[in-house]
Image 1: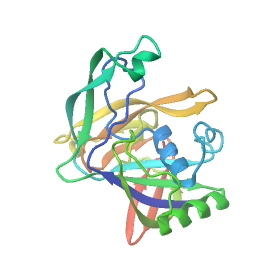
Image 2: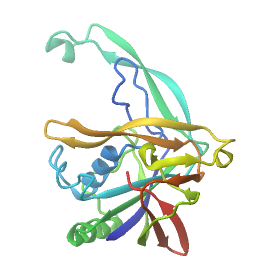
Image 3: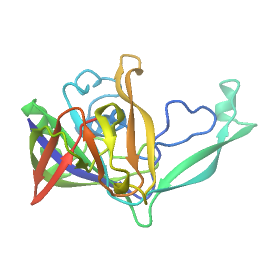
Image 4: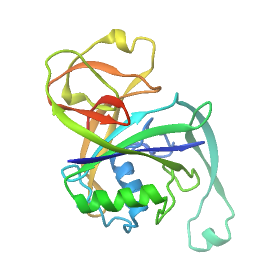
Length: 242
């Protein structure tokens, strides 16, 4: 299985939680579906056309937090329209709380994208190397534009171990038997329910809970499923696909 590694970063980010309504709360990391959408945009896939091609059985995605993240709440003015004319000549507005993610410098994530589809990996790698993206990358919403740094190809090997293992990426809660609390006792860690796959009509067909840290930190845990050792550019990391 071929694996590409690249970083995406920007000044601000927002990844709307699936269960929020009037208040726009954000996940700490881009969900798997959002990350697949970023990759689809790089490749020029049309909106809602790639769900089957990039489902979790065909395109494997892991995400690592690369910067310390904090959030701020802002209030946005939205148009309150009760008719078509209200869109073009708005008379009322409504204010919506909006959670924004940021960092002391840029907010940054490392993405691992792996697949047995060699044509897909070649197409994605070519665009990453040449920085030729069909649609510009963004961090959740169009006005939070991002930039991409291609890191390289990774050699990944499936591993199994019954001992405590340091994992550098987001972990599915169902894959954990036990956590070494001392590894994360001084860092904020959240359990986030995030979508994993969409089906036609942008309906969620899979969702899982994941452990996420708000700064770069390995989570040391005993796992009940295989993990992957990723080697690239002299780095060795244990990763888990979402």
